[in-house]
Length: 349
Ligand code: BGC
Image (cartoon, rainbow, N blue to C red):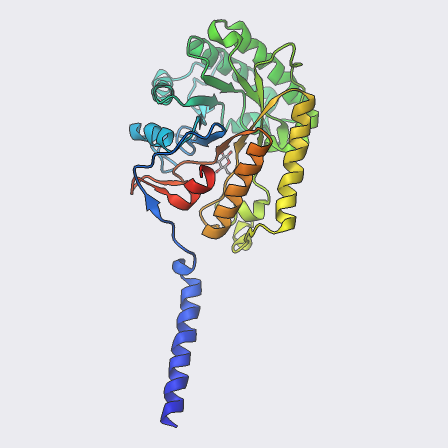
């Protein structure tokens, strides 16, 4: 009887502990952190320095860019650096919407460091939320921004690329976007210097989704060969964005996994094949400008998904820039000054 009681007690402890463990943060495996990484350059690979200059003010979303990041990114084998920038928040209120010189200096600092570290650098207009709600009201501001950015950077080397607008969405439909993008291209090209042939990056509406490529009207290749087309891919959103604070219902998605089963892989391949087909017809190179998983996704799924997406993009000759470096989707822990090894290896094996 005594043995039986001890057995029951032990079983209770084991089962009880399991239950506690499942609900604790330690249920998911932890990352391994590595410093001083040196990797061979992956010619397709890049990363976003997100949640810094694209926040309402730098630091407001927890990230202040540090000088060391640029070298650390280069050393990890990345070739491209996408720097999202919320210009619209840093201008005068009225036409010609002069950009705050201090903010411009901060962007210069980042761009110069990126180029100094031999990273092909992409700057864009990011989180111009107002234009998505009211395109007409913000049309002039969009053009004035490009006039200033183009003028300011026109003598920078060709390894600086301009991306016209991150994720046109909401009321910015294809009809409106096609009109605006065509005018913005003219503004940049007419500004002279290296801008006449600088690479411009342009993506479709509905958050740069692949299914909207067909509605996008950009110049023919023969008219302007220096355009790259960008798409973003976060499917399934219930997986990649589970538990994120900015999407309604996302807590109910917690626990969604990505195991690499045939149907999951097929969804990616079908989407990327569609993009590639479009690109071939239009003779354009593709940039997968954003993909990634939020920190609440379990490690195994994150690694499998990240690796699969990156390799499938490469197979179709797409450059990719992972979302993002050291915030909630991040592959780098700025406090520890170390990479999350499993994620970095998934990106740049
Ligand atoms: C947004 C970020 C967001 C990410 C993933 C980006 O385009 O700028 O704020 O975290 O997409 O949803």
